[in-house]
Image (cartoon, rainbow, N blue to C red):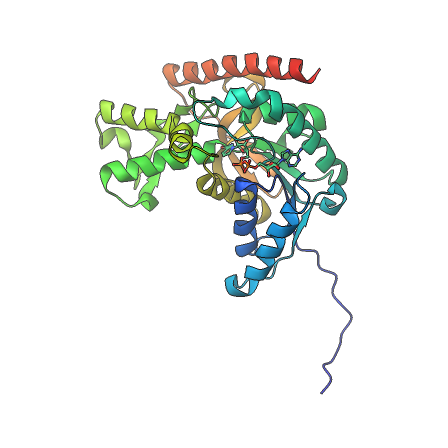
Length: 322
Ligand code: TXD
């Protein structure tokens, strides 16, 4: 029997390029593909490695019941016309290291990755993940000159997820009922907002005393380092990949999720010419809106302290590149 053939429909599924096929990048590739969100191009400098990982993912497709395409490559030409580009390329921390100590190596890697990827996908939305996050996002923006709605950094979603997990564990409630908001930079100075963190709509300030909240805030600030210490080799990747995937999903299916992301500020919160974590809605055009929360004087001062420290690091990073 011969099947009736009609004229073929030209249909391009969305395409996500992930630069850096290490722990975070490969875990993200698996999540995007298994959710059937987009075709994925996984790029790395290590010849054979992204190709091998892509083949491994292809061989899991039947079991995971997904039909997206996956390509592993070392060639930016394969990333052409991507809708979203995620940069995870660069070194992770070792025990005892701060994120800022990665600057020397990662600055050049991120600038090269961002410019090469955007040359092939000028309309893409760029999500930077490499540490030190806020500084790397600034450098990628400077190098690509992308409009501010199409470039952002991922950190606030992860930091909020960590705060959310610690609150759920402390109170013995389902993590699904906990909502949190962590602003600022991805580092010791981040600003977890207890007043805007709730359990089923009830602010945590009603459910825990100040000392307990402070303990959970401190654990959130040290969340990355706690895992680096335990693992000894490499850093966290399950929660980071899940956090990036949430942002990618909100963009690809135009969900308008309100998420804390490192966005370029032009006067919001009294800050200019800086990427820092603030609540944004993410849709098919990238950042649809930056939300300005009513912060207390202390919260706003904490955000400005992050910004001051970031500015110093941005200057050092620019000096490294010149
Ligand atoms: O919240 C956040 N923003 C973060 C950031 C959460 C977790 C991890 N975070 C940072 O992401 C971490 O500190 C690192 O800077 C990156 C990647 O972390 P990952 O754990 O995935 O590191 P790996 O496993 O070492 O992978 C990095 C890969 C590795 O395969 C290298 O070969 C590759 O990056 N690499 C490159 N790919 C493409 N192009 C260039 N130039 C390049 N250089 C290295």
